[in-house]
Length: 65
Ligand code: FES
Image (tube, rainbow, N blue to C red):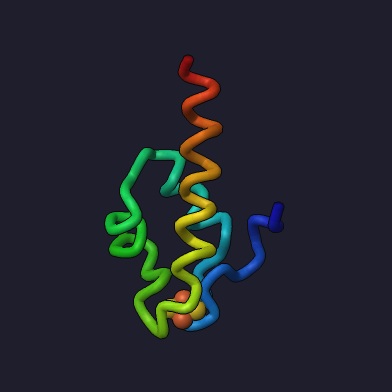
């Protein structure tokens, strides 16, 4: 687990917290990229961003069911 204020995307300085919040709104990877700007540079953070979204997604699922 990463601290929410930690930067997930060093190109855009988007933090884990920013992606986390968007992921909690059940947005797709593309939407989260569009809204936060994460992953819009070199793309090397894509795996990390996707993983975080998945993580949040599975937590959301647990709470809803
Ligand atoms: S580190 Fe995220 S686009 Fe480069």
